[in-house]
Image (cartoon, rainbow, N blue to C red; front, side, top):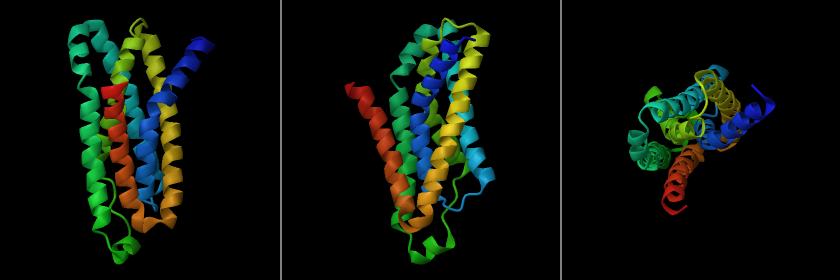
Length: 195
């Protein structure tokens, strides 16, 4: 592993982790009392997905490139629909919440919603398989591992930042978190359709 390989993998990880960072920020806003263990679990789930997706993409490119290319056009739509569903749920929950609900705490992120967020924020990393297609198994694994570590660190930062802000604005955090998730989904879709 050369310095250039590591640097390229870190930069790729930073680029891929931006959606996960934004979703982490929203999750931190929505759960301002999140314990450290849950924070690490959430960041870890995103890191696992960001590791898995490039490896799956790499595998498909190496074995079934034509099928993967046909599927690739649906990736932004899948991410958009997942984030729209999750964000819409958070938004509606925030709109129906009163002061006593805010004081008693915020609804925790379920495992199902967390897994959907993991897929939605990492599904674009499938296409990274094209960029690492020439790598051998060890190099592809190493690149995906670096991407996962970078994602974990960035997501922890997003969760901590969101949690700190959410402490001050707990009543409106769910609304803001939902709007952020819907915005991320729209950004992914618009970027796919027009750029």
